[in-house]
Image 1: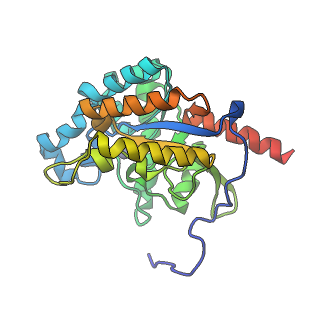
Image 2 (image 1 turned 30 degrees about the horizontal axis):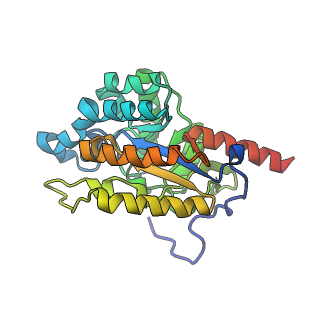
Image 3 (image 1 turned 45 degrees about the vertical axis):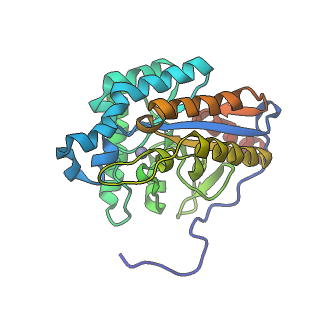
Length: 291
Ligand SMILES: [Zn+2]
């Protein structure tokens, strides 16, 4: 494929519309967990499948992480969205079932967590279709939300998401409020609930033999999260969390997350919502604006 490097906005979506959050709240908090399990380690690096210790980072999800995260959310009375790769739903069905049973939203996160690649369109579409089939067969769920594995996207994939009934995406980094994608053929695309990379726990809390990085504790993370949240709140945006049970389900990180969420939940001026609730609010504001 030749690359079109001509100057133009590389995301053609119009600006995010101004609309109020429900119940007079000033901002929104979207708690999202990516239940990658072992797919984070084998999706883009299949040779890791023969490294039991490397993949055991991901195995923590099913053994400990998911259950501890569900316990935390239950303690705080919060609902979240869990983006689950199809492979995870098949390999760890019993660990995933309590997520839906507790009333949380289940959303799409690819099949084997392969980073979407525009040079391999068939593979990118197959990841979507196999993921949908697995979530339906194992968890009885038809998701409306999608977060791209490894956080990548491109026009043909956005169109495929829309064609498969996926109504929102939560991957892009280019706004602090939701907006609607514009597909290459001019059709409206999914609603984007943009993420904030400062709230991706993998950046601070994951290190491994093959990808050794510094990790950080409470003194680094809580001030960063508090300040980023405070300003996003001030600007009326959505604070989107990109968390992983294999990171934030670990003992120290679990306590950091608990304290951060408890602070926000105690405020009363933040709308804590799932991706689906944010989508539905967006769409109701959109249809009212069109009247
Ligand atoms: Zn992921």
